[in-house]
Length: 483
Length: 147
Image (tube, rainbow over all chains, first blue to last red; front, side):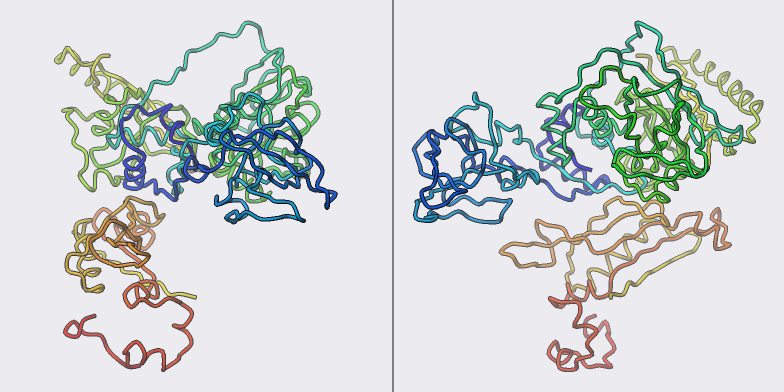
């Protein structure tokens, strides 16, 4: 999992330095694999103006360029087809180390013409595989300025290893939340203001799953957006995606990728005009074929949930969208899919089809049914969790049944006096709702008694459904300070 | 090829503190550094809960790795409290029994201790190599001679 420092700070309010943040990450189980500070590696490279590019006298494919670096004019021999008079490019001076080709530049002669430095491509900068030509900067790029700054690359990239139990940290916000819990700042509030729709969606979701296999896709929602204009996404968004190694495609696709990495929430957008009828979440027909977004055709079977419209399967649930109903540059109406899938189903589907996708990676590690739930561990877990949740302003607390590390090491001390947790460990299918209701009633009564005795506290009654191999309902009544 | 050694302690009272003490004592004796700092980093293994990875203190100044108190850390092993499910699946009541486990690569820690640059030479059965590093083929390590 990669992210940039500024991206993290979108969610994390902190005074801590990069070093303090990376140290803390390693110590809370999010092992830092590397920090790439490209402002440092790209330091020698600056914006330069190609004053003149003329044909090399002794070579058909080379050009001799007079380059204005802002401080001096130098002659450079360049083989790129797009090198031309009047362009702005990126100049690597003699003595600089060019990361993409692992070479330190020396002054020299190429076919008899002096060459003092280099105009570089993205591949030579180690930024991408792009080697069709040299980097073509916009005309208004300031002469002599640092390339890293102009290209938005002056933001350190942090890479962390995520163990399989930490699906919650497969989004930048999850990482920020964990750092906050470790005392490294405060979590910035996320704007989740609900925007009411102004028209009824012409496409509707339907879940058509057998009664005993509802958990394969317990929830799906959608939203129809009319009259959007697709095209390249804004520069800041492209910069962030590139920084973590993703290739920007178009605004619509980039947004879904961004949300996947920002909030750990995979999304899919359909080109609504290519969807026929309503969309149905159901198990695929054995032998049904689908052309997926990666350009390959996959054969589905009846253990896989697929998204169907009247034309057939349009997406592989939790794994990958379909090519036919995917968004293109000319897409104007889109339908957004937000779904939850059973981690086991997604893992098995992905393994059978041999697809590794960002969506699969997240769904098979278990996505939270609601966003922004705090996971609590430890014998007195709920107490700790509530204490932390109060600090963070997290509205939900989720308590796994097993004790965990934080408590084992005695790191946290709760200041609450009440612990009214009740865990019901039962498969959802056989769960007696009467028992649940009784438990809730009893606990509510207890909680209200506490509430009455202590005026400054309110009683919350959250109920959770945890989407893990064994579906488990956990109920807790916890007193919290009134906000 | 490499070898992994695993340690497992199961009884009624062993806890994380015992795990920490055991590994600290072992690492200090093995590397012969009395004030060797150890760092237990939370991690995840499916068969232990909680789990930790253990780093030992080192310094990498001047391109030379020196084990002991220093600015850097070097990861050498994984450990944790045995997962109750593992005990239950072995027919041991996890309500009554608990314990800890750890594992490390034998060649890896030997390489660190003696400064061997290459792992493959372990398996070449070359007596000259053994002698070069001052070992006799049937030598038994003892606390008196250093481990």
